[in-house]
Amino acid sequence: MEMFGEYGFFGALLLAGVFLGLGPVLVPLLIAPHSRGEKTEETYECGMETIGSAWIRFDLAFYLFALIFLAFSVAALYLFPVAVVYNSDAYIWRDLIAVTLFLLIMSSPLVYAWRMGVFGGGRGVVITQEDDTHEKAD
Image 1 (tube, rainbow, N blue to C red):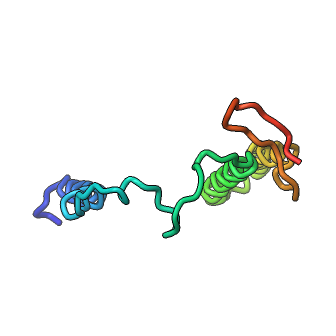
Image 2: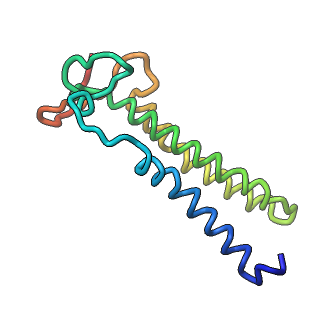
């Protein structure tokens, strides 16, 4: 370690990070074939021929479900460090109130989605491509 100097190890890690980050982006540019043909411009859909247009109506519930997943994964990521930091007996009520408040705020997307009908068996709100109006699907 002494031969690198004070910041040598940090510099080596920084160079390794840059190489590992840019390597997978630059290597395919150098070794991949660069052919442009009729099949290159087509949409690839699981090896099957594409039928119809890509502009179809998707249920808004898919997007809401993804946002709910994101919100709860962020909440779980923040709860692990909180459990480690809040281990003092002197401030147990303050810590409990802080974690409870955090969980209440993070559960608001769940309440919103529940009211929108995302978790129901039927379909929810659909956005049409033509005029971007909201309509209730049956």
